[in-house]
Image (cartoon, rainbow, N blue to C red; front, side, top):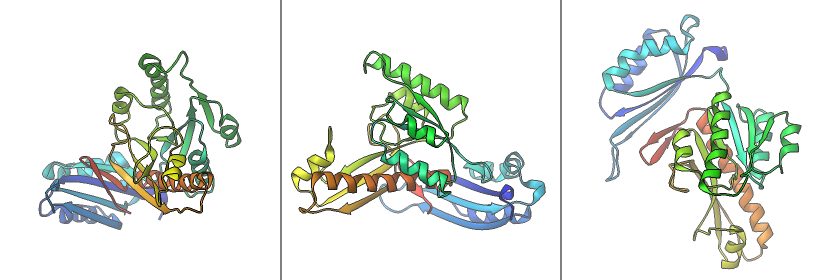
Length: 294
């Protein structure tokens, strides 16, 4: 099946009977072939949202292989169930901007996965407040934008720099901004502009360590488990809806430098998974949490 004929439908709505039947029946009547379908109803427990979520990967016949035509075809079912529904063309590679400061392990991992085809995205630009990875960007033929915080890190200076990023996102028609260890706190305005299309990675420990050299702090406390969390960016620092997490065991035999290396490996893998699931349209927002169809 040509890639140009493959699409993904994602939807959420109030949980009720008949949704799967309506969606699959419509696709069948239109001559579409369902390749994969997953669904989940959040109806159990005190924190349940009573919402239904669905992801359908399907192939459309040639005369319907267009997002606008499929949206029109789906309009009645969308209105009937009051769905938040979107149709994505898999032939279109998502366009990314990666933001980084002075720790390049996550950036390097994303670049390698993209070049080797493990991550089917188009990284349009790398943005940094330092020049550390300008040569790395050039080696991959990717535009590098050095946007320093000229004059300090006060709110006005930060906001002016963020507006340059927003302009780049608009000009390049960016689908996702990836904060690959970008070590700046984002303004509420910037977070709002990128709602649902910006992913951050950060270390997460039990207990949690903040500030400089967190892995060194973890080593000093003798932790046995270190990890990382990838989440959507919100104005609440490191409190956005979680997409993926992972951990690795460490012990007394590892130096602070060795623990740092383990932590960076975990961060790279967790961020890559989160980015891949997002661009494959596997992540659906469910209030302050997510549904991830793997």
